[in-house]
Length: 112
Image 1 (cartoon, rainbow, N blue to C red):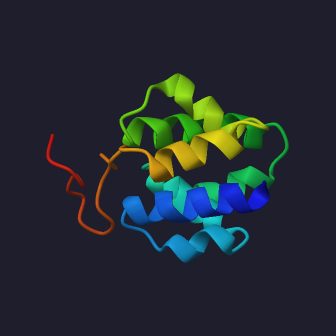
Image 2 (tube, helix red, strand yellow):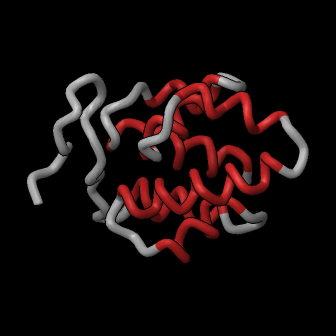
């Protein structure tokens, strides 16, 4: 089941214009996830602070969902067990397109 999340994150990162292989690198995958969510990369540090990590996790998950054109409630499918086994494959293999910023440009990835 973990492999399903990793594959889903890999393809999701690719769709967002990031390196898919980042999904398998501990800590770096959280850094990339923050970037996909449109948040500063240093937010990954907040994941190691108890209680704060829950709040940051929710914010990042909801923003990732929104950056793929999904509702904020879909973000919970990306965060709370066992839903990441469902949420990331839906983003990866579904028709969702990344609507956030292209890496390094500040320009939208898809014209809306």
